[in-house]
Amino acid sequence: MDMENLAFAVSVWVLPVLIAVTIHEAAHGWVAWRLGDDTAYRLGRVTFNPFSHIDLFGTILLPALMLFASGGRMMFGFAKPVPVNFAGLGHPRRDMVLVALAGPGSNLLLAVISAALVHLLPMFSGDVYQWAGHNLINSVRINLLLCVFNMLPMPPLDGGRVAVGLLPNPLSRRLARLERAGIAIILAAVFILPWIGGKIGVDLNVFWWLVGIPTEYLMEAVFMITGHG
Image (tube, rainbow, N blue to C red; front, side):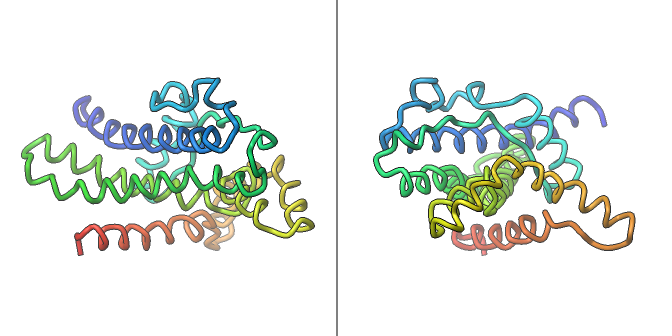
């Protein structure tokens, strides 16, 4: 692959990832700020400046490489966590759920907007048409992957925090205790289980079952509601 094609391939994955992650993290901080906790605001995290949120490896290189290598079927990455002092929220238990939902909710909204903007592609032609088209389609896929993945009910993912906020106290406390081990469990499910499955001849791609397949169905729904049939 020559440098021009490489630059094209990288840009149509990295740019949508940067926008998706930036909006996701800013949404967490903005909702927390509006609900009474200004920690993220004071630290400059309620911003659309991607440099305030990105981790070079976790936000750009890792997800871009995984998306590129899998043809858009698989993504894993991380950004700098937005600090939230839940005790500073007006109604901590309820507001924790709202703050957690803000990130995936923003990604769902971005996916819908990106799909709607595909209607504008006939205004362009040639390389611009190709570049804009790839960015918009990848934006839909990346935002929906982020939305579905982050809503898995495992702390410290957003879905885990939502579950902790909604479950009865005994179950909520038990789930909350998994937060320290949560990332290890997620990494094992994403990387180790498929590797073991490959060695023993069994499909153990849990990530594809729980995230990839729901994302494909969501993509179909998003394109349908935005008039693409």
